[in-house]
Length: 409
Image 1 (cartoon, rainbow, N blue to C red):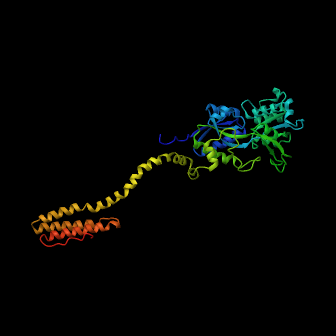
Image 2: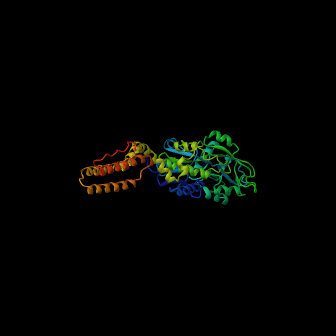
Image 3: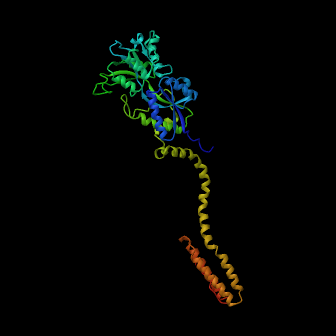
């Protein structure tokens, strides 16, 4: 094939659980890519662990994945397009139940999400950090809105979410006076012990200034959500996904300033070469000025330019001589007729025959006068006309002296 293959018009995106923050973001990616002519099938999953498995198996092309969960095998077959946003590890407890620290939760009913979710993986990791025995009741599988409803109903004592601050159920929990957000007072120490975590602070009043939510700064730990892809995803699709990530995550959030995300360095998967070039140089020249389809075609078609130029170069060099030949041919084609008329005139024994030949020469002179040539070839045209006149005089005076036209005429 002379050209690289065209990008697919259809991809599969592991979106997490319906109602979750990942799913809401995946729907936004779906809308933006559809506007560029690429259809996105959203695949519902239990969370980041399942998303990674589906990517490894080739069942999806793209997924949102919680940082810190990728295995060595994942890093061999997957790429990242960058970190997208911090997703704090939120732990909400029923107000007034005396729970003040994460370690206190060993003796309570604690919902940490289903198997296959990033929330559960992180919760189990933190339970291991805090040590001690954690019974099954402290590792319940409820998640998302279902877990939030269970906390309000009193069927669980605490719930955990690893989610964006914009997640609807997180916002609801933060505003619920019957629920308290558990602080991680040793967040910097936890972040130092686990590379995938960062210490972040939910500032006082940042959720709602008027209602003073939260009523004090709350220290938290947070992994970073990243956009993971298979290594065989088409580069044009990569660029389109990064364009979408810029549009979706570039404005900042309650936890980060505008322009902080996406971040090519905030990822535990190897960043793709296409993504690295995009973050360094911005979108390609063609993508700045053309639609996705047109830019992609031109980007693929450039490989044809070299063989085409190889073919065109001799044609370009030959063009001026060909042009000169075509113009002069319009002039010199008449000389055949002139020589025939001259020969007939020399052989004509009677005045009537010579008169007919003179008439033919006059008609020829009139036709030549209608020939259109560039100004630079006018001297050739007038030389032709003088030669017609010379032959005419030869025919009229077969035995007389006739002056030949000057060579420069």
